[in-house]
Length: 88
Image 1: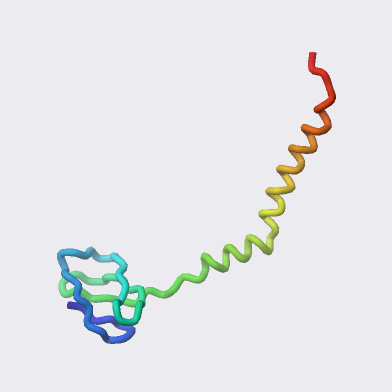
Image 2 (image 1 turned 180 degrees about the horizontal axis):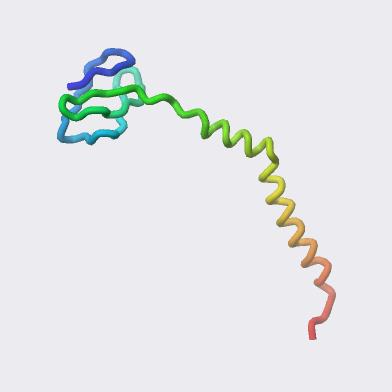
């Protein structure tokens, strides 16, 4: 038995079913929890990692996707320029 650090709910966790570092969810409040100790089982709240979402937004702002599309357009332009030439 372990206690959720966010809502103090009792969570049924068998020490033989989890390993240190495992992530579980509190069935009462839905918080993501990390197993920090096995004997006794202790849980710690995991901070939401918003950096991944911020990185995705930064990529759009940098225009990386547009640069990749421009590279594809450049290849198409080369093909168009040589389409009428004979290679003998």
